[in-house]
Length: 332
Image 1 (spheres, helix red, strand yellow):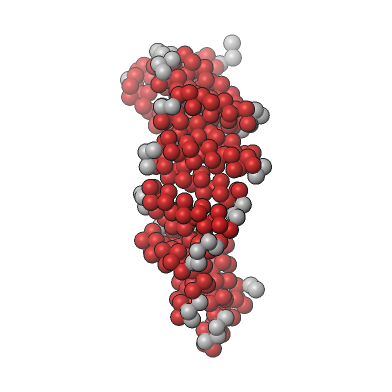
Image 2: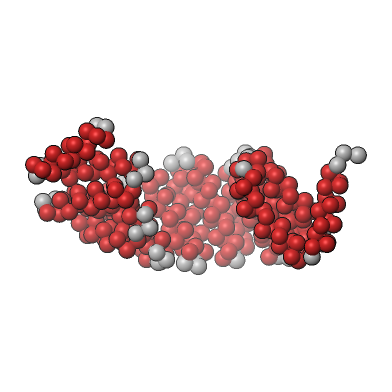
């Protein structure tokens, strides 16, 4: 049904007090969400939820309020989102997909409002409901990954690593190799943050073995090991790993790891006293990123680090290094 026909159907149903009105409002809300009209979609969903409430259709009200919470969360209306999703959870029957959805949505709201430990409890509630109805491994994995993120935000990397490992195993079991690799990288990162060196080494090795041809993943793992080397006061190894990460990122057309590597190399070279190399890493990084995302976005990333070099070195030294860099680039 096109938009005009849907609007007309909603109007007719409203005038006639047709019980089909709630369903039509939900249909129009879906159309509005697809068009990016989130505020209007939220209004339709609220009206539909209230109609279901008045008709004592608890399950329908639960389903619609959960969807309403998601839209309100996207609009940044977190207080309203929480009220609606808590109502949805209250109405959802135990051990049903509706209970899983409501508990998951509540976890998202709690995470975004700075209550990560409460979010963990809500995600675990979703897993308990899901275990009773046999939700698929991918859905379980996604919940474990959200738990890992929540524990990370709560400052508990050890528990984050446990959850990320569980997510990786579930993704791998379901045949989702890329998602499994991502979770393994998150597990390794959490273990490094927790200071669990031997476990981190194992996790990094497992992640590398699982994605030998994924240059983006290998770049992220090189950066992680480079950070470890800095902690261990081995700047030479840190630089080698950061340089390898940059090459992997180039080979895999992985922009974010490339940018991170370029910034890391510049910092390491400046610490080592190689000002020309530090400037070059940022200058080349700017140009390379600009080819991918446009000069304006690249400038927003690389201008500040270059200005920081100017501040630390002084204007005359910065200009001399810059001139030397461009002179070396001229054909002989």
